[in-house]
Length: 115
Image (cartoon, rainbow, N blue to C red; front, top):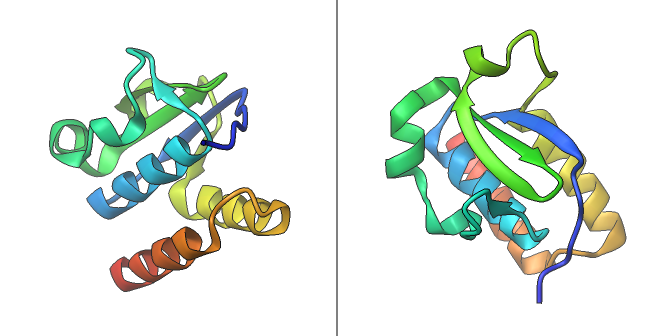
């Protein structure tokens, strides 16, 4: 069972493949889907991240996701760095206990290793 959290609209900039993959795991846990209806982790990095590389942004709007290069969103929507999104997400979900603590610890370790 996923914990549904609606993010009304946010654009997250991921600079590395690891950040992209971690973002997909987090977004799937809170109930987001690609605009096609597929789960975030069904489209891992080789397909999506390689297209735009360190310019990749993922837009989340009412639980639906799409992606484009950062240039597409610049000037239209505020862009959140993955690090800031992750810190806010981690703080909010640790307090509300919406995420399995083992998963958060695992993600923390992977993120620290890849920084």
